[in-house]
Image 1: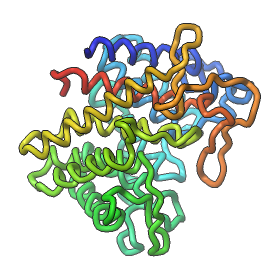
Image 2 (image 1 turned 90 degrees about the vertical axis):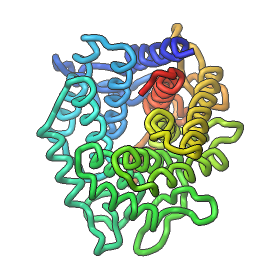
Image 3 (image 1 turned 30 degrees about the vertical axis):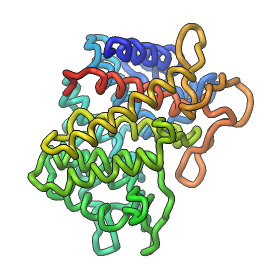
Length: 369
């Protein structure tokens, strides 16, 4: 079983490599993902690049290296990191705390798991995330600098990173803030955030994913049984409300293209890492595994094949549409990237498909840890 998913993950990686990976401005020793395929000249020149999409590309490369260690991929990981900093004006930092949290997560994993360490970058990003904590203003950390929107997409990944980075007390404070502030009492799903004291009631798949990741990390690292109980509750809520027929719901292209992939990543973490201390732990692990594998099977069945390589759909339960070079392109509007006319054109959508294949590979192998 696991070899099947390893092969599919390798095909997904090959598709991204062929269609999206290029040197940044032709500079040797660099790499970034072109944000669209087919690409315009502006895309190929990285006039558009989307910081947080590139962080997930880096995270996927780490996944691939764990699945199939190769020296050349370690080189690609280092090039991706170098390209990111160069394109970000020789800096790791930007104005969006969620962006910085995603990069911190990917860099931490690259250092710990594959030996491409950037300790100064991690220190800088950790400093940004720690200093953004403002309980006196109702947070949480805000979504971006000079903003009063405190949301799960910033607090979740930031707290996962801080837990892994040894700042356990702050990660626990953030998890308690999310649990007290953003959990829907009816569905038990995670609301998007809170702004000016009012709930922003949207419920996105990736918000569930990052909270699952955070509570799993804390269940591993602490003796507090609340964290495992929160995982049990949220896995059940996701299964009931966000995975019709067992397949995780899609959110289109643009930034939404990554949402279900992120949920799959952290469901896989539940399946492999939640300590199996009770029957409820076992049930949550089994449900998480089932959701990942059912989603991956659907996404694979509904893919298109272009030049022998997979092209994943924005919605894993529907047949993918092959994009063209015409039509509206993804645009950055009001702090978020909207979808291309055909969402499959967006790198985000293809990264999520690859992320899902890597997740399936980790949960399909009974020896996975």
